[in-house]
Image (cartoon, rainbow, N blue to C red; front, side, top):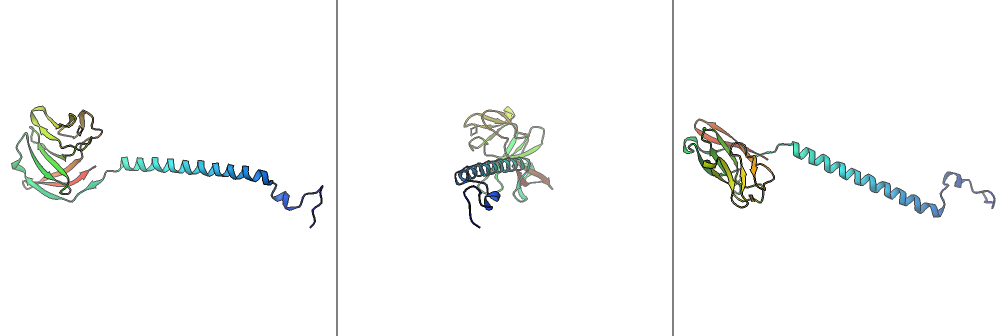
Length: 165
Ligand code: FES
């Protein structure tokens, strides 16, 4: 088919974009892809953050820790759980209840100690204070509660069952 000056070729009806306009279309599509990709990344990040915050991870396998009668009311027992690199603390409150936590402060990782007279777990690095029954932050800069270790007393032996993080 021949092209006449006053009549455009037939294919031009299907592809009406001129060479100068093709750049604009490409840029526009590029921006659409950019917006779509950014939106997808943002949505994925939000979804992952939501799933992570809702999920309770239990690490560690059940392991014997200590004979229960070795930890008197107001006393503590230091051990390592779930691995040998993880310091942990078992405390017996004055009312007799046993609780176990990671000994690593959630601020910068210093080691917390039990202070029964003050009814608290204390981090000396920046005066972080945690509740010895729940591990919740009471004072200071720690952003999160201490990692709690599930424990159970079986026939006079305290067992660690897993870490809640
Ligand atoms: Fe524990 Fe800073 S490291 S309060």
